[in-house]
Structure formats: C-alpha cells, structure tokens
Image (cartoon, rainbow, N blue to C red; front, side):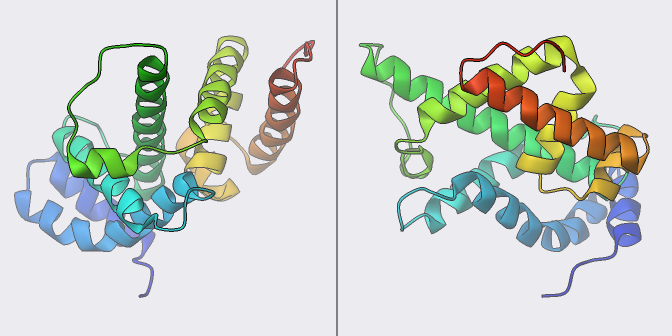
Length: 194
C-alpha cells in the first residue's frame, strides 16, 4: 500500500474540521494502515497473537479521534501526534486498571476487544515511562512532546519539527537530551536538568 501524500491527508483533515463529513470517509482508509503501524509499535514485545490487540487499540483510538472533531487539525503530522498521545493514554489507563485489579481493586466488566488489548507484563514499564514523561513535562514540555511524537508516534524529525514549529536541530537536541533524562529517571538517577 502506498503512503498517501501529506498534502492529501492535510486537505482532508481541514475539510473534516470544517464539517465536511465525506472528508472523514475519504480520510479513514488513508490513515488506517499508518495508525495500525503506530499501534503495533505500542504493542510490540507482547505475546505473539497481538493482531487483535493492535486492532483493538487502533479502533479505540480511532473512535476517540472521530469524536474529537473540535480539534483544530494543522496537518498530517499533527493528526499522528494526537493519535500517538491517545494511544499512549489508552494503554496507560489499561495498565493502571490492571495494577488496581492486582491490588484488590474492584473488578470491571470489559468487552472481548478490551480484554485482548490489555498488555501483559508491559504495564509496569509503561506506567514508569508515563510517570517519567510527566516529570519531564513538568521540567520541559517540549522535550516531553518530542519523545511522545518520535518514540510513541513514530514521527520523523521533520514531522516533529513541523508540529512543534521548531528547527530540525532543536528536535534532534531535545530528542537526545530527553532520552538521557529519561534513562536517568527510569534507572533511579537524579538528572540535573532536561
């Protein structure tokens, strides 16, 4: 499958934002495969039968995206940055739910898709990373956003720079410093600055 052009996706996002319902119908097949790849990045390292997990994550994120019509879409990169954030939030929420249940929290009724989506053995790492990213955001929001877009969203340096409206060098520097900061944070060290 060929990648849709950035301009084509951007035009459809803008049309959708302006209320053109047919734009969403045209946009869906263009972005679905890339959303699946994004979800697969989140789900890698899970048990071998992860296709349904990936699909469930994409479907949940997609439902939230189409519900968010009030978002002022800038372009394709912005769309995938928002998608990355949504997928991260969905997985973090599920990891928290699993930890709560392990600690005696009230059991919750879930659908089959939801049950298949829950990551096994990865939840604690995801929660630690989420907590570290929140700490990084309190020190330097942009570096946290760069990590989210590059690591979770799979955006290129160029796409990240466009979404954040900064130079390529700034993204590369933020990416390098944020990775070092997170490594120290996750290993129990105390970074001096971001």
